Length: 359
Ligand SMILES: NC(=O)c1ccc[n+]([C@@H]2O[C@H](COP(=O)([O-])OP(=O)(O)OC[C@H]3O[C@@H](n4cnc5c(N)ncnc54)[C@H](O)[C@@H]3O)[C@@H](O)[C@H]2O)c1
Image 1: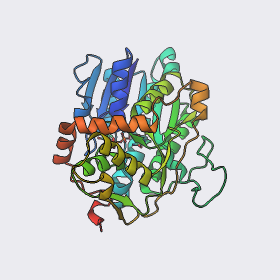
Image 2: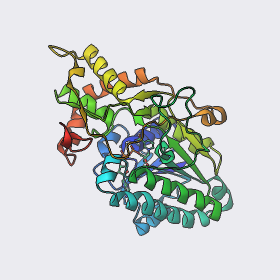
Image 3: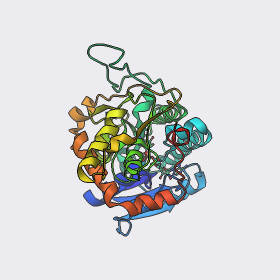
Image 4: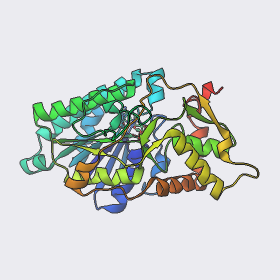
């Protein structure tokens, strides 16, 4: 197959591209605008592979999309390009509306035109795989508030997004479903929980905590740190996405999750414990650097995925536990200082995740 991946220079996109090149005979055309979040250094290990091509393109640019589809004639699209950071969407939603909604619409229209003129066999086999988030479902009851068995997000959970980011992703999911229902475009949607792992941009919780810890800085925690997220190792997600694009049923949605519900404060303490073990400080524990910052407005309390459908229908299960995945992640950041130093010294200014508001 020739797979056109959008956003392949980002955190999850680069894991998907590396996974496809390293584990299949398929080719990848990576189209990415290279915003602050896109980093071609994350693709260094496969960049010279003959089955890999990169094109610097904005998914809002219809004529460039038309050129790329005509030139490469892909068999499938995996759409990951997005503005993805909730804090950025709160301070500046414009780019989120533009890329996540208008960009997805522009891409769907380019794909519809391209797919419409394919010969019958290729038309039937074609897939448009839209990669989305569990944040479209809003939040779930928290164990501090409700006793007993707690609900999980299933593929039937109603959409109730809370932030400009999740609302823009929910909009894009609706567009994709409508293009399937109205035009028959062979689409599949996946909604995944929080990812973590190597090459994660250091404004997100886990890499931020690892890097601040080893640099002797404060470890900022929103509110009381009791928000619950369901963490999935990024390479497990990449494997799931490849399974869905190659084996998933057209028109279906699959939830992807790690069965790793953790409070943010637990995650931060686990990172501190790993660092205490593998790179101890001269005196004391990294956990002494923890501090609490004003909570994010509209902060969702709990996310948790029921991933039964993808397990039963496609036979996918995560390989990493949270403990093994977190060990691998911390070790990767310790060994790959050049990668994150360059990210930090470049466009990224380290101003997010409440770092401007530490009290
Ligand atoms: N990170 C998570 O935990 C998570 C969880 C579930 C779903 N998702 C979804 O997975 C996808 C990838 O997430 P990520 O964490 O890798 O994001 P990311 O921010 O690390 O990467 C996004 C990539 O998209 C590119 N991009 C942005 N705007 C573009 C545009 N207009 N045209 C072309 N390229 C553009 C960026 O340059 C970057 O390479 C997103 O759609 C996100 O909503 C993320």
